[in-house]
Image (tube, rainbow, N blue to C red; front, side):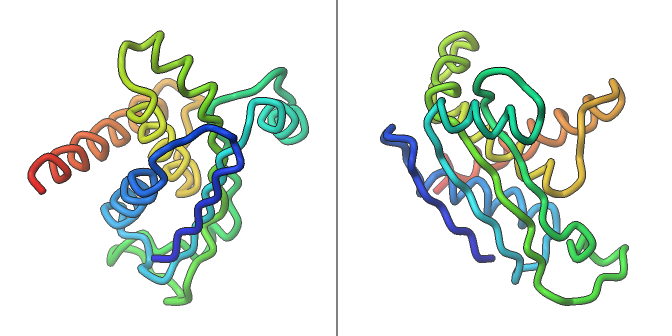
Length: 156
């Protein structure tokens, strides 16, 4: 799986851990191993601009996901795929926003970035949380992936 990461946020973060959690989540979801993903970390001003331009939101948000090629995502053996590598899309993270949310939630900024990375990856795979049932499904899956990934890191 090809995952590119660029930290343009001005905040020091553990990009290796963000790459690892993204790779773990996508592997667990049965995404084609030839898939490509881009992760971009940005400052709050740029995130606010993206949020306004693409989502109609005011101010910076924590994560945005921009799917590229949903039709070629390999969802595993139960679904026929083209076998072509998929360009999943882009996940954009705002570490400063994540840090504030982490403080409010009582965990580390790194934990918040890991959560947001998995959240963004699930959005790229077509998950959403607009409706209560969708939210339950997405957040349950997100929590399972994070817990399993943390367990593998502690075991290693």
